Image (cartoon, rainbow, N blue to C red; front, side, top):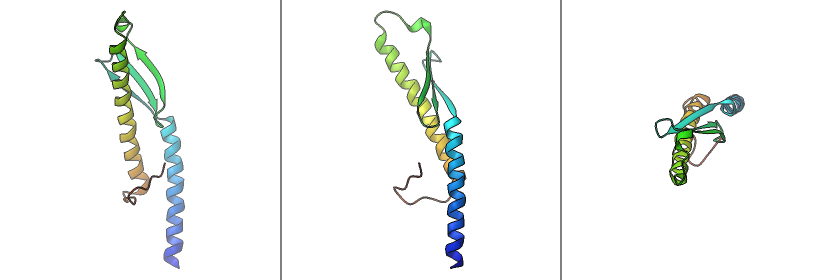
Length: 106
């Protein structure tokens, strides 16, 4: 019975740390870039795009496809950084304990 109570307390502690981590991730902003900084995007920790900046020198007639490709590459760069940060935070919250396969906490 003591083990069950201990497990419940640990679960509550993890839940509290998870909530704090989610708040931190919501405030997190990560910048991704492509084209040597000509295109930049900023995402929050939830993967939502906050801003896009395109160097004015890129906006020329007939180059829309290149601009679109650069924006997509910058978004992908920022998104992968957010996912890496989430992995680190998750390890901190769970104390390095592996989660069962298929279990996601957010």
